Image (tube, rainbow, N blue to C red; front, side, top):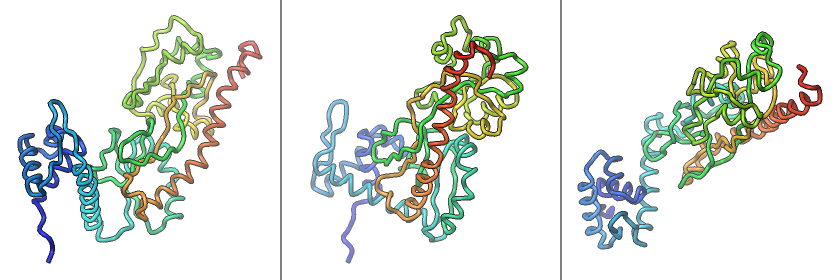
Length: 326
């Protein structure tokens, strides 16, 4: 006969409070009051006969027993959540839900999906668009791609490739506006990609003009975009010069819809990461997705680096030719 269990609400309240180390944050997540969470946790402690928290003046601290219980309960809720996902998908285990930004999906992922279906014909990939940090405990997501620095508790962060920015514009725009040297960008419309402010690294024209040694420029003026894909579309349409992400611009540069007129190229000191909950990394569907993305990233990284190096060489080429157009 199965051993009796404490109420599920008490287990859920403790798991949330242990993960967040706060009754208030746990209450917000569970849509109840902090007093209700505290009551549920105390009831669980009485049921188990142990203390799960040391309650300080400003924060909660897990006891040794609390640490052990939190690990087991978190794993249990992950298994329950996985079971619900399987039921929703019809009982199969060949579905994986991937969260990416719209720009990353449009510029990098979608053009490669044909190879994914050929490599993983039995795997149903479902995409979820989102720009906020992913919460695997609350969202129906199996894996995610985000740009950042990779450090996320309880999440496996697999590096894919870095990101660099450089001025880009359509060849027609460069020709018509007579753009021959960095200072010429001070007199044309500037397009701003604000999307990486979410990870604390805005792509600033101010930084670029400083590195290019161009002073006295009102670099804040111009149209602003919260999407790295759309700003490149605007630049290709001749709306102005953008400080574009080269990982996104690589195909436009190859097809000559965009051109880097000159250096510098800025290393953003960020990488794109595939994020997977640590406890789920060995699941077959997730492991298959990971293997494919790692393969695609390994093929892409040298192409991106070649574009970066070509952009950096423009500074030497321009200088050696006395500022003439190349």
